Image (tube, rainbow over all chains, first blue to last red; front, side, top):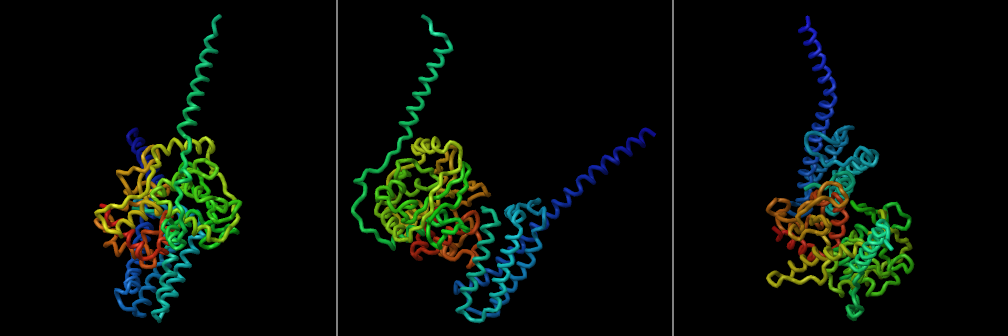
Length: 155
Length: 304
């Protein structure tokens, strides 16, 4: 009887610990998953930017189809990125360089991301070489201002 | 007659305090340039403008984004610059007579830039990076002043920093200067070519890269043995990257790659130059002639 009581108590303590820790575990996983997912998204944007930069640097010839495809990839990544900064994902098991302003100044963050997406969409329909550099510069400005406001410097 | 012990101790303390205060006043005394240091010189505004951009003066001296007096490209100052020791409000650099540099002489300007001393004879806090500008020859300073004086005057009163005991701390900067401020201009390395030396000068002098990219010791003096090796961010947000071994660490392919990064930043997909305030600096450097950007890049990639 005594032993049963003890095991019930042990069980309830264990349960309490598990239940108590559960939200922590969940939030930390959510943070970690979101951080990983958005870092992959940003890398995807970076890869598509490389394709565009190669044209800007004149390493590759101007090709509206390539420009459009890369710009579309970037625009779609921006739409995904908008969902990858949920509340509580300012930290996780992997390092994030997102500044807390992402969550404390959410409106500006969302506006900035939307403006970046618009710049990418505008770049999609560029058909002439003369319009390419200014459109790419516009997208670059958006990347830059968002990074300045919402990303910590990293080594 | 015996003097009570308490009163004697008080007398000793008063004496020690007086000696301490006297030593403080002597050790912190400003040491300005002599008027003879200013040579006759006709300022070259184009060279002055290049120095203005090489120094990214606007990154700190532009007006706050929402200020009514803000004008693009005009350094009317006043934008809060937070640091671990207090919040600074950069000086109005326009030729406005009352609030800007309008009434400053060449000597006033040179003293501010290389000795960190205001026209009133007070120390500037080294948040204003004169410990780098001392590398600049006086003729370069006069070119820069000439360019500033060619800008439209904007009325924007200067503001004291937010920190406790500002005037005592300001005087105390004189003590800091004994370790933190060198004198003498940049001396080129005869074993290197002209571009490398131009780059070294722009980075060390007007560009003042070391102010953030060189870690500081406990006296807040940049540690020359770790020149440009990176460290904590002065505004307390993350860290400032090292500029040494940029190619070995695969940050950039070569000097040409870094040149493009400095000129075009995110437009060319270089995403490392737009955090912690570097975005504004990249935008300034992008306005330099290509030869100067390439010189900066050549010097930087040579640091291992």
